[in-house]
Figure 1 (cartoon, rainbow over the protein chains, first blue to last red):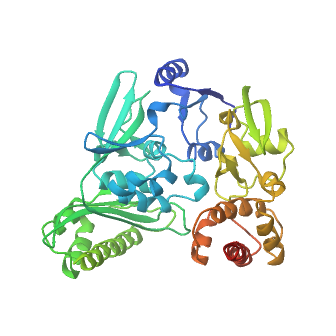
Figure 2: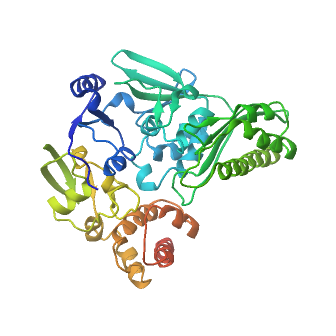
Figure 3: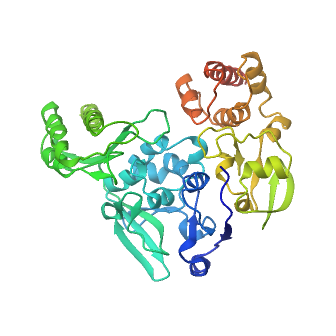
Length: 288
Length: 157
């Protein structure tokens, strides 16, 4: 279907954005790359009075290392994640996730800020920012707030963003750790039926601070606490991987969806757990 | 109506557009450039793939109103420039276009892959084209055509 009739305004600075948001109130809808929003408008899932385009705001751009963190402006493209040297060096998990996000033509326009603000529970980047223990920097006319990624996603398609507040950037700590992402989708580039983004440290063969984040299995990405507890301090081997798989029963309560029943999702989560952790095991063996 | 001034296939275009006009309708209905196809109109099928500021994008997921200052290149543009004449010849030779609806999008997407450095495998060609639906060919002939073009280009000094 064609998009609904609506207005369009370009904000060229944060100051222009605040006045545009004031003028249009709650029926004003922010648009960045629009790769999700415009598809939902074609389905008439919402009918905003005005789209407010933020892609011309320079403060929302840029990839840099500052203050002990990798900072990605909200307008960073998925296509930049795969190839930027700073991202590759400091958050290789994001570089690994980028090819899983949709298709080249969409990665060339979709943004990290848009993906996080939309908060699709089956999307890759929300899970990755939690796995990397990132901080979401939000900004409104009242100033900046720093929200830990693990607290940013509050419910299905809901975030900690307040009305008239946007994502300015995402910061990732410069911690050396292993990271991996795996997902199962019906077609390359589709949303995952289930996925897992994971990071951990290995010290003297022992797993330290594992963060296993499952996506496509609930209303928000799930940081699996029982699974992490089952893995903490243990060496990576068949026994510890089985323990993590068993612990998932406590962490995951997937809903039935178009793809299948809860038990199928639980099965996929166990399969992904084995793939990701076996992958770390192989890396460890190669490094040794 | 939103005023926009942009470049389409090298020519300066100045128009007023409704915000609800997507880039494909702007090209087809306002400019008469009917090479870019409107398929699903929600970003899934890839028939509307074209180039904005040098990178391929979904024309149906772009507001024409947002393109002030942009550089748009369509299948008409890369056909006339000769950039993809070898790829188009390979499509004909391999019978990679049947009904032809997906073909402009396929060519635009494959052109970006061919322009990148490296020698993609058949699997990588399929992956790159995974966002472009074809309901006729079963894809085999399309991958063949891209692979042939890749080979003949890398054989040249």
